[in-house]
Amino acid sequence: ASDSRVHIVEVGPRDGLQNEKTAIPLATKIELIERLAKTGLGTIEVGSFVAPKWVPQMASSDEIMEHVLQHKISSPVPISYAFLVPNSRGLANATAILQQHADAYVAEVQQARELAESSGESSQAPVFKPAVELAVFAAATETFSQKNLNCDIATSLERFREVISAAKKIFPASVDGQPSPTPLRVRAYISVVLGCPFEGRNVDPKRVAQIATDLLEMGADEIALGDTTGMGTAPRTKELLRSVTAAGVRHEDVALHFHDTYGQALVNTAVGLEHGIRTYDSSVGGLGGCPYSPGATGNVATENMVYFLESLGMKTGVDLDAVADIGSWITGEIGKANDSSVGKAVLGS
Ligand code: HMG
Ligand code: MG
Image (cartoon, rainbow, N blue to C red; front, side, top):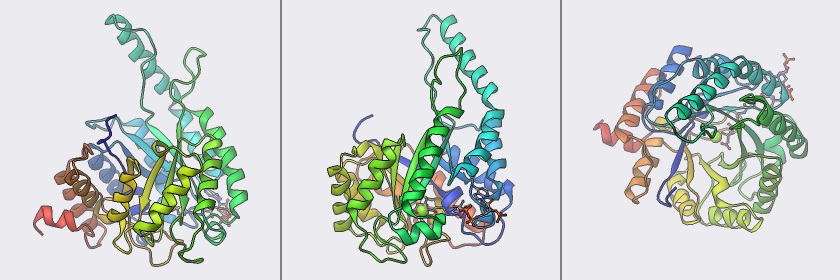
């Protein structure tokens, strides 16, 4: 991929909706996902296998996983649908659904292979982008870890080691006894990397770097650094990225996840771009907030992210007008103000 290509991870259907108090109908969530799928986004985070007692809005995640596996949602690019998994209980719930679809997946792989052979092309296994990926989530401070995961950081990492290694084995099942052509991709978040609602803004960047290297060593494919509170500033983002690089983490293995509570998300994105990072999370309409981060607002809006990146000559492949329409629609649907300045400007509203 060229250096000007930026991958946007749309987290609206998960991070954007998880904190909404009123139950959003499944049909609305699915419509949101299907509309987003048509805009050129390559990854959409759509659910979370967490305790419904804590995050009731995500209770429909099993139905959403069923839906994305069962229906071929039309999209201009292959899409990976992401789901959070906090522990082995969550992984077991996800695995039960994934396994029901493993046969169909294998059949598809074989069909594609036969097609490639009959058309005289190479008989190598076709490369598929996995349709589903999972994400674990650690924290950079002990207090946040306790509030969000009900355990300390060390315990959470031990759990993630098991979750990651088990996740790598489940889906897709192997074809003809060969290793899986594309084992499930697992992202690992680290929250509160630039400020904690309980411990303040001085989060130790070296601690973050250590957690990141631990998670990569466990087999995580990507580290998503979460500015959960939006307290990050440009100088501290730079310091954090330097620490992470100094610990040996490659910039291509890092994604940045900025909440825009203080309006610094795009400034911090610019710092990330200079550092070589090419994956950024955002949420349509600026939806979102974390139930364990009081006062934190949504992720930076996807509309603002696309507009900003394209203005720098970067390529996102995302249709800004289409995302703006979706932002206006979904915020109306759930009775929130559209939090995307760019979305509103594009729509002239
Ligand atoms: P626990 O340690 O088992 O204890 O769960 P608990 O007391 O918190 O929960 C216990 C109850 O949940 C039990 O049920 C368990 O069986 C059940 P009960 O006996 O009371 O009926 N349970 C589960 N049910 C379904 N699926 C599961 C599961 N696990 C336990 N996977 C746990 C700890 C972390 C699982 C729980 O506290 C939980 O789910 N918390 C919610 C955490 C969460 O969703 N946070 C928001 C997402 S992270 C985020 O937004 C940040 C991010 O965006 C990045 C950033 O911005 O920085 C990713
Ligand atoms: Mg978040």
